[in-house]
Length: 415
Image (cartoon, rainbow, N blue to C red):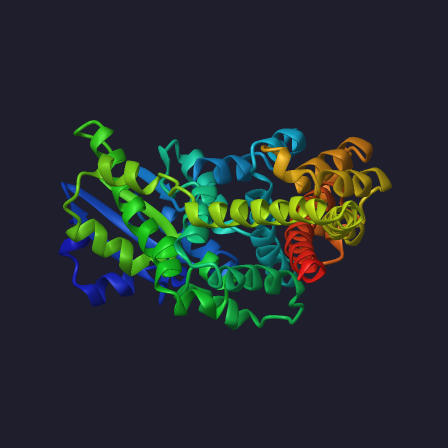
């Protein structure tokens, strides 16, 4: 007899103890039964629930809330050692890598308290599927795409809330009770990392939660459609419980073509053009003022030019110094920042970070301890990989502050 034919009360009574009161939804779509098991990403109870579900029922496929890169990182934790920091910086991915590490530190802080690794329930699902020879589907959107869409979905000032939420997850050292961890079943891990800001921002909630609900539902339908007619008619879907209702609704009611939905939601939205043009306009205005100063008086022109060099280079170098940079990376920041308008491409933060990585090449041990060390704020200065990323960020911020400070100072000198 199928589980659908068993009354709900009887089905609950038949469940193993580990599954009692766990968030479970069952959805029928296109001849496939999807059993959605909601989990907390750092929870012993969730690991037990996954193992119990795999032992209690038989499935033709197991799907997990991971993208391919995160799944690969879970299969091979040492793969990060192969990361080419120079390539990461050149490709402009330093910010995304740093944000991913901050999210990992949020998980690791919880894991350190209770001795369970972040995403252990996903690892349990992967191991259980492999042990049974069951096909494994990774159905979440790439985490880098999600972070970029979240970042670009909110306004300039709201982005400070995003940064604040990320930084708070690093500097907040307050212990979290285990029963509070179970409350993470009511929200998504990414949303939790951004604290209350996510719940108050509709664009951010849409990027972090709603879009991924639609994306994962479409991916599940895609995978089921690729499967032979006689196979994979029952699929266990292990997801964070914050996605449970949304994913169930999308699976039941979604009518859009799955491939179209996946392609649309996997796109990185283009950067807004106005901030770039504003920045370019301000730099042009500053150099027009410098030219005007030289026109009025050579000594005055020399003075305001020196102000530009000292303020932009000084604040950039200060960023490298605060990041604990090597003297060469501090010097690189000082030289690169003033000539930024004439040097399109890699920003001053990237040049300084590459100098740091070249002088203080990350060791194998830095990669091995990276995820543990970034769980505490001081680890960002102790670990060479993390310090290089911190250098990139602080020099970039310092350069920006220096440009605006120099512009204001030059205006005061002339008028």
